[in-house]
Image (cartoon, rainbow, N blue to C red; front, side, top):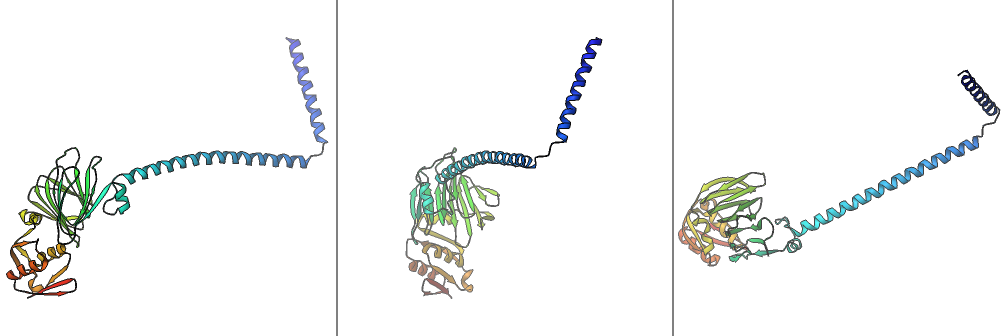
Length: 308
């Protein structure tokens, strides 16, 4: 035991002597500043290279992620470009790419046709309708601006949607009339079945048969019960007049024949009764009204004025 302690003490002594010799050697050696600077610069260069390698790796990963994201976005855009576009603002090229056809009815005429699902449409004068060559997806969606009468083929698994200016009409199977005029007013008259009007303000309203919803700028302003024949007789080429104010009548005729018709204030509220045949030309129609309401008819260019 004593011998081991002695050996340990000798080793400690030798270590102390060796340390003293090293310190003495350092104490009298001059400092090599150039070598130190070179070592420092080399360390800085190595750290810069390491940072660059890290940045290259980060850039490569970011570029790959960006490329993947661009690929996903491009795929998404191509997918949506091939799906239903926003019909109210789509260009002819977009419509053609999505498989939609366009129908524009000339002034003073009507046109009847059937959609791919068998639904029947009668489009009134100066009406624009967009519809697909084939219905695909969960909805049967068309666009209409003007006036249309619809008999929708029943298909509870594929709701039928008519997109219009500022609102949509959603149905399963029903008969109804939609009218949009140039002054941002519109009406939906339900003949049979059930429809829901979805407005842009996230409100919706359901109609029952004989209901008429009147809209202004896409928002329902009134709901009333009406005689639907008064609003659908145009599909037969007739216009029933059951006390319709002359101002409303000439507005409808102006929309139908594509001409501006005005009347003096003294005639505006005159109620008109009877029946007009819209298959006649405008001059004949106005002469028929003249037999009921005494008035003078004057033309100026593409406008007509009715005076007492």
